Image (cartoon, rainbow, N blue to C red; front, top):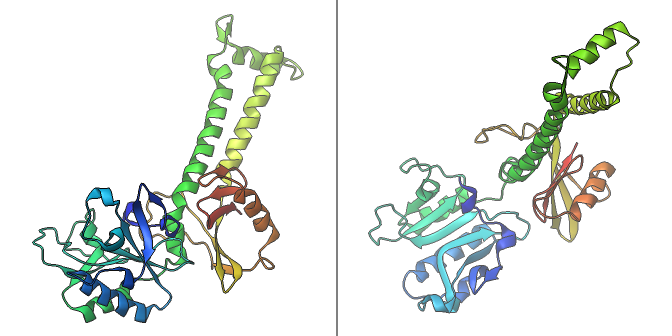
Length: 318
């Protein structure tokens, strides 16, 4: 499922020029037209998930959306709780069929749905539709849920992977630049300096003719050892999700592996069982790295420390 269809809870309430997504309740909708069906759907879902919240699109009055009370247009009603990083999915009473004919149905959109009647690239691939409210409620109960640990890693790993790959490119470039003098350096007697120095090494007490060459060789060795060490010992991360429950701050620590592997559909990035810690039980090395990342910018990668994905998700090196 495309990440663009997944709404972060932190984006709810951010309005730009009167447009965006905000929280609302059933009582804020007019009961005219299709809204009466939407309201019934919302009320039934709230019976299943008492702590959920609803959010929907807000339009600027200048957009000409005059039929929506409080400028709300409930064509997609996102479902979430305050402790979630992403919304679970959304519901609607709309016509989301490809060959739309204006026949509205109860719709549930979820990352867990694979509707193979439609191509994977279409939004309908992740929607189930029905004209019956009781079936729609069962669909919501079946498909709408918070992100589990595997999904948290799958949906948040792209930033740390990018930071890691940029670091790997940097050390490769350092090694490449350090090798240049040995591949493209000036020649003496028709031979590269490297051969002249190596001939002298054989005939002497390992004292090189050129101090510059000695320094270049030292630089090359350092860059090479760094590269080999990184290649032999790939970086592993803990994905740490910080959230609150009943007034207490909790840390979900998720060991990960193979984050840079290309395929991620059904491949688990978890490397062991996740654990939930308090401030008292969180390992000190993880706490220390979280302290550094907490003052970093969102999207910033710090080598040997980790990566800050969002306000509540961090990757720290193991």
